[in-house]
Image 1 (spheres, helix red, strand yellow):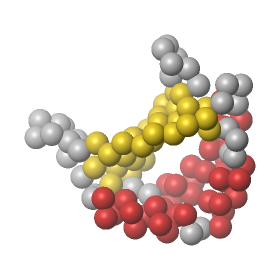
Image 2 (spheres, one colour):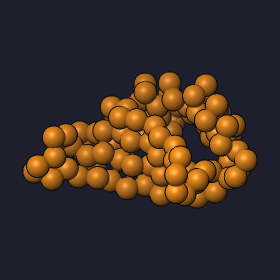
Image 3 (cartoon, rainbow, N blue to C red):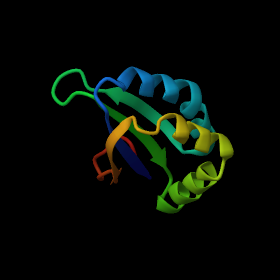
Image 4 (cartoon, helix red, strand yellow):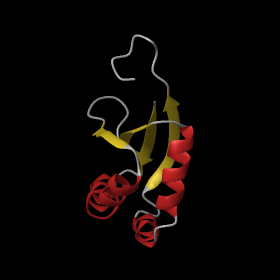
Length: 104
């Protein structure tokens, strides 16, 4: 099992637009294609204009196959067009649980 942490830095002033587009256009598509949706978070203290999404997959191969199918889905391309210019930068990390993690 792996967890993907997707870390988005949103252009200042565009957070509301980004969250609305994700909720109305992106999230249902991702839930259809990707692994288990763990959560979606924004920062309240510290670095602002920051969104983190967490997704659980069985393996890297599972992640790659699911993401490829999603990227080929035309409505996903519509979502990407809708958020164009809203993301300042993005970082993705793959988290692997240790032997003491309750999530494995």
